[in-house]
Image (cartoon, rainbow, N blue to C red; front, side, top):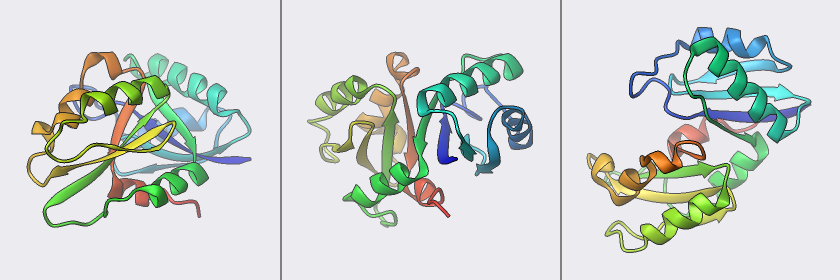
Length: 174
């Protein structure tokens, strides 16, 4: 079995509320083992024999059916998440800046985001791999940052989700 991190897009924000106990129950009915939710923002650790692509498809279908919303997820192995965290050049704990990693199921979305944010005062995003870019925003100013505004655009809803680096640190393989 492969250990995966599953990242739900837009859960417990914008009117889509899912209790983590209900999410666990829904996912436990799938060909997934050891389902664990991390925080209340749609971060799941689980093991499965499914491929990454098949797991993504299976989870999205189950979420749509059970919770009745247009569900989109990013699925990465936990080893890959650990490698992305390790590659991040920004600190997890900084008194003035928060570090974020935007994950994508479509590398071209990250290409667009990187190009659009190149002139951001907080610094150009750093590509960590085909599925992730790291960026930072001032404490208290995340929602006003160029990257936050860009990543919230409807065109990226199906393919991206963003997590604070501190959250990703909680998803290390055990």
